[in-house]
Length: 510
Ligand code: BES
Ligand code: MN
Ligand code: ZN
Image (cartoon, rainbow, N blue to C red; front, top):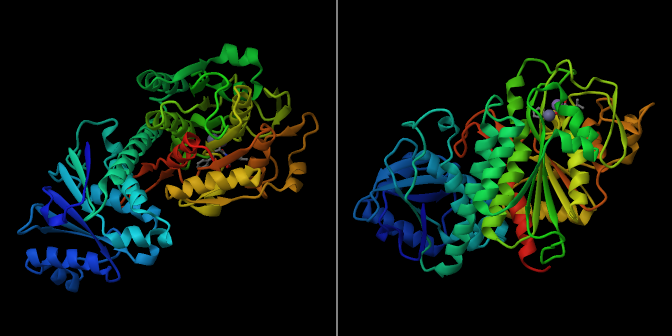
């Protein structure tokens, strides 16, 4: 897809469809003049439809009108809500909703008018026009994604594959907006990689297949890759990682992607490691899950898919940036060789762990991966994992639960996420709960009484890090059970943009 930012007036831009955001309030005078001229050329239909309510500011409500006396063939009026509520998340969603509204239509050139009121008001004034261009482009690119096409050939109802996206910003200095838009497109493409991998079925994506996919991506983008199989993992002492995959015929793989030489650091002196939970299917193991919604556990590999995609995206945007991505991939199944409740294993960092519940498997594989990331020289760590049902019960599907230490590293990660419109809420690492995980036979166990189980999941992981670390529990936000105006059902790509934004901080000094 070609991306073009133009400073022309929207009526003069050749396109199949021109999207026009509709705000609840009157826009500023410059935007009002543009809107009045569009309406005049259309014989007053925009204003008429608005009076009728067919054109409305309700977020993502849309109406398709015939363009007249203008270059675009059609005008898509789309609700953008109240100016005061317009933030980065709404900007992204609005763009994805525009693209998805065109599903099934024969559209190859889409233009989107970005009123100056939006850029000025967004996130209560903190969002610049370049931020808006980046987020809108990211949204359109992600809006093209359709999981219905993974296992079936072309559909008549898919969002169109655009040849060209034109951002129309009258009077703008286009060069910085063009660069930001192109960056947004690359981030959107990365999210599509993450979403596509995550949505694939467990009989399709085993740990080995995930490692093969990572290998192909590494080759295509010039990343180093090391895939650690069961023999080496055992030899190295990754007892927690190895405990989880034992019940499955599909052997585990620890996928390690790297950019930059050994010992290299980014411009802030960091070597950031992105670590993602890659349970290709989580049956619970011997502590087996109930049948209800067990099919959703194919999504338990989403963290791994996210970090694999994120290091590719970062490489495309900053080819020389040192970065690590680790994706421990396993299938958690019951069977004659499975780890049993009560089994004792030794972690890579030497700690002895009692597996009290085989369904608390994510923390076992992540613990060893975090230790290994530090051994590879990581100075700062961020992990993403569909770790607990508790996080969804607490925050639902719209907010990711996050833990971290020290606080300034937590704040850095969450601020990077906020710049991409991703929402986090902090969960405290309260030391008092550590005693609930005490074990008679081991240093501690992998779960405990259900109260505060969300906090305890973070406390467990903390046992395996010694450097600044943040844990993102994406169990609620990783996938949706229903389609929305801006996204199909399935993987959302959550945390990908946060990780890329964070990594890119390393391009410039602090
Ligand atoms: N993969 C699950 C968490 C999950 C649940 C993700 C629902 C997405 C939707 C995880 O491995 C798990 O089973 N966690 C247990 C932990 C418990 C045994 C301490 C849970 O949340 O019940
Ligand atoms: Mn589990
Ligand atoms: Zn799991």
